[in-house]
Length: 125
Image 1: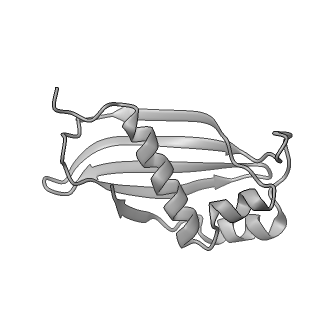
Image 2: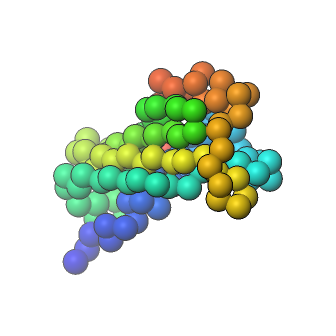
């Protein structure tokens, strides 16, 4: 059909989230080595216009909420060539340990996240 498969948007959101964390001083691999995991527990996507194959896309990722044991990211996907917004979405993540038991965000990590709460990050995907 010449358009990007709808599930790819979730992959792009993951890339944006990983880069947002890295850009704000939190390497996800290091989190996992420290026994902190952030599985997706809720996701939503609103598709406004299709992305075509070989379109250059820009994804804006923003941390929207930081709770004691949950975080929420928001996403906005745009095609820079025409400025069209293609999709918006969000993911909610629980904080769990290596056995998937709920845990609180460590204080130091929570502070780093809160420091970047309003800082959007845009990446090309």
